Image: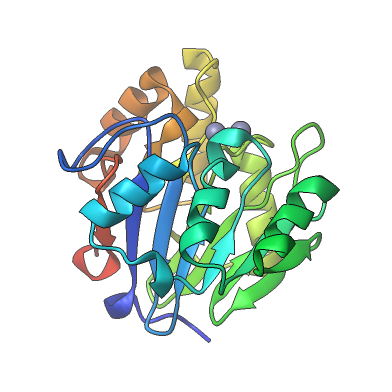
Length: 245
Ligand SMILES: [Zn+2]
Ligand SMILES: [Zn+2]
């Protein structure tokens, strides 16, 4: 099923920067994806209190969330999980199969269901996981198949953004409409970031919304390169796909 972009929104709940002054910043990442059928929480940030506080400020009822997808085991993406499960345990949680047994058991003990992910899979209508990528830090990214093209959402992109896209290409060869999330370029040189930018061009990625671990230099370079196709990221940000052409 291809997702209708008119009914698709992305809400940034957790990030290092604040866009809506009613929300609080924190090191980590979390984004809510709303489709016509479901609400999917991608990552939970580091602290349950900030995650739930920002949800309240953004008028997101945690009980309205159906599915949770965790990108990788780092605490700045999974730390808010316990706090979230106290509000809503009626969810299915998709986690990389390499997560520790202890973490999985804790989620199961709350009453939530767990689906361990290894290979690329369709999580729900039009919404895919790349499957586990990388070696040192195993990570999954989310891919939405929309009528405007693919939307890629990354937690930290530890395996590198090029590797992420290589996995996305196993799912679909459609145009990439938007790439959003942490691009993990914080410690990279200007030269290395230019190489990544060149790759974004070759892949013809239309919009970018880098945040979290992308780093100030890379964010500045993306902003210069993409101009009006750069969507500033921060807590409280709501991206309605219908507003972008
Ligand atoms: Zn990480
Ligand atoms: Zn991170």
